[in-house]
Length: 302
Image 1 (tube, rainbow, N blue to C red):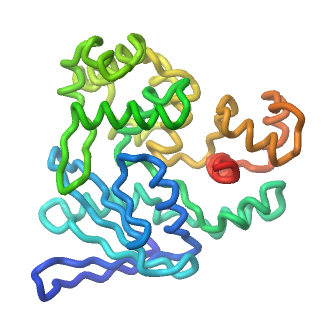
Image 2: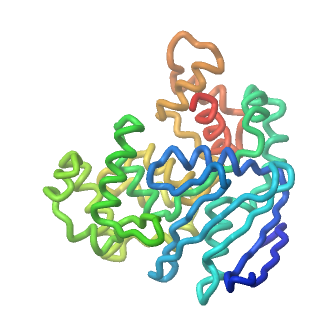
Image 3: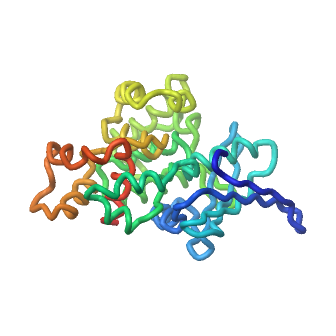
């Protein structure tokens, strides 16, 4: 991992402990705060840790990431990744938590913008990815046009009914299982008929080889948009959120998102939600880090 200091040691009890130091700022406590919104995430605020479900070459691994540093001097202990998949598991954790992203440079970019105070208030908040791109796309579809509370409830029902548990952590049901479900199966969980069709359809696309998330990582935002927008149930909002939280792309601004609209309304003290033309005008100075502008705007109203 670039720009990171990594140390490894075996403890007296036979367990393996890895320590990672990265360049600050990086506020892991705000990361945990945001992760804790989702009831499926196993977050321990007091212990400053989270259990992360990883599926490496089909093998379920539960990694524990614990902060032992500060925002300005971030340091983490990693447990659970030892073994034959360690290198790939560590690489995936670095992707999820975006440990390679220079947040100091991004904060500097926003010092001369209208978002200066929001960035100071939430200093060192990174974009943290969903634990897998597949999870992210399914979650985006399930969350469409639902209030946040019921969206999380519906996702939790789906995962706990058809997924599996390991060491207290839930793994999303894999495509081979979801592809075999019927609309009626998901209707029993209070999915709408359409949403059930969309979720099952995504799984079938994966099983048919038409949707490969490793290949998507190598494509441009534009090419990914062109591919995903063809899928039933996938609109611009879904693709933008997938690019941001599934792949960590830095320059997305989902203007149709109600949360961002409300945040801009609050920031500029508008009487009504801003029109798309207004949002385009406000956001011109925020490129090429629109994803971070989006994240910090969400944070400002959470």
